[in-house]
Each structure stands twice: as C-alpha cells, then as structure tokens.
Image 1 (cartoon, rainbow, N blue to C red):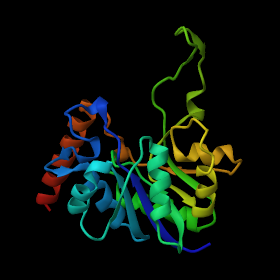
Image 2: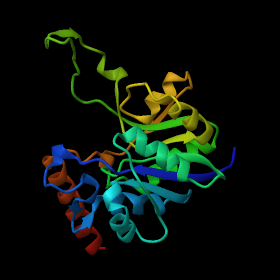
Image 3: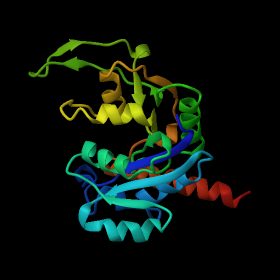
Image 4: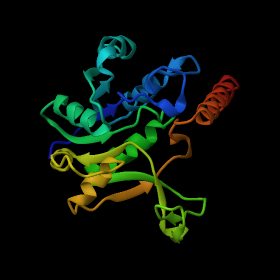
Length: 229
C-alpha cells in the first residue's frame, strides 16, 4: 500500500435543514464558507497531500475559486455516495490512504485528521473517530413504540474524517445498493474490521441553525483567546 494520503470532501448537498437558500457547504461561518474551513483543516494536516472536493455541478467554478488552485474540484452527484465515488476516481493513482471528510464539520482540528491518517498508516484498514453517547437512545418501530433501549456504554457517535485503505474503500463503493449513512458502513458490509479512535468535541456536524450558532460562538471564543496570547 502506498503511504500517500488523499482526502475527499463530498460537498454537493443542499443542506435544507440548515435553511438560508445557499448550499450548506458554502454557508459563511465567521465570514468564511464552511467548506473552506474544512478544507483548510485537511491541508493543515501533516499527512494529507491531495484534496478533492465534489461540489454542486452548477457551482464547480465558484467553489474552485473559493478553494484555490491547490484543491481539485469535481461535479458531485445527486447522492452523497455518488459524490464520494466521483471524488475517489479523481485522486492521483499513487494515493494509498483515503480520508473522507464532511464539509459540514468546519471546526475539526487538524490533529484529529492526523490521528486518523496515522492509524490507517499503522495498519488498520478502516478507522473512524468517535465520541461516547451522552443521551439515552431508544430503538423504535414504525408506529413509534419503543422496541428496546441499547446500552449507552456500548454506543458511540461517529465523526469524520473517516480513513481507509484506498483499495478497500473502492471495493466498498462498487456496491451501489447498500443503504448506509457513512462510509464505514459500506466497509463493514464487506466484513472488514473498523477501528475507532477518540474523536473531538469541536468536530460536530453543522446541520441545523442552532449548530451554526454554536460554531460561531466557538470560533469567536477561539479568536478572542488567540488575541490574548
């Protein structure tokens, strides 16, 4: 396996829950698009040498101008899996490790990106950052009745970037019929072990308006603390 690390960012979604009429990835966060902040985190990693972004097809040129010439921008698909598949195909042939990162996680620290990449390079075929679940979770049926209450200590909330050996992720994405919500789910379906590492609180996903408010507040606090140093 080549030790060169690339990252793909599916960013073609509309993000309707966030509102505002602008594609979620391009929503400003403290004056700069979330996508730009997410990509800058990847570029700040000690391991990532290439970044490919799957953008809304009508905004490829706009996104390219925002991100600059060092980032490859390709037209994304109608579904997230289509965007990841297209971005994977655009990576250089000698990329051996792939990180898949959500554009909607703009505050993810570069140290987490490095931790995921390091774990894959150390020999784990698939690695995901996770956090303990703090709320009780209920499984319900189609009528809304509780079926069971899973043990909270055995549950984890999954973040990105998720890291994979490129050959394994390619094989996983060759299966177009599996309904999954993350890339690790496709890899799990192959029977490949997925390793977890500690995630980061600030790597939360900006999905709803309240998440945007929290992200703005955290950025303002960080900038204030930096100014006091």
